[in-house]
Length: 166
Image 1 (cartoon, one colour):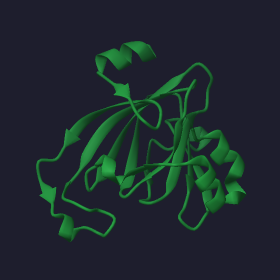
Image 2 (image 1 turned 90 degrees about the vertical axis):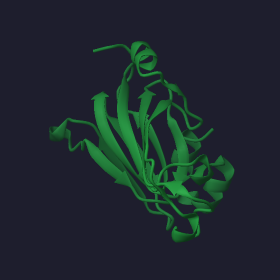
Image 3 (image 1 turned 135 degrees about the vertical axis):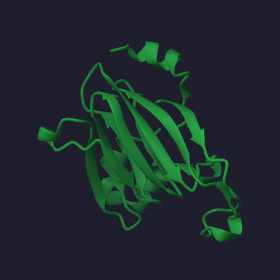
């Protein structure tokens, strides 16, 4: 298997604001009118977008949310622990990977408007996944958590929020 650095170069990945590295690999040519979308969307969106996303064990994907459901697809590396907080404050987690004996799943959908963060479960390792959203992603749909604000909304999850925000 290629190293993290070799994959970053080969796939032309760039740093992502939430942590990790990414590259958009698909943006549908078909778009949806903003007037046909829910109120969270303030303009037209492409039907769908996909990215590569790489996360290493020396970093984390900070809590954030998007207006769309986000499907994660595991490609290679070590498993990812995905943490989620629903709009109602329910915490859950899922392991994304290919070790079925350890109850990992190779594909998972984070529901729209859920706060979520991710980390690698094994030291000195990384994972490469794909993320697909529909309607297509726009940074206007992305909100990176402010630690104190999120802790005020969900004080019962203070420790995980503090650990996985910047």
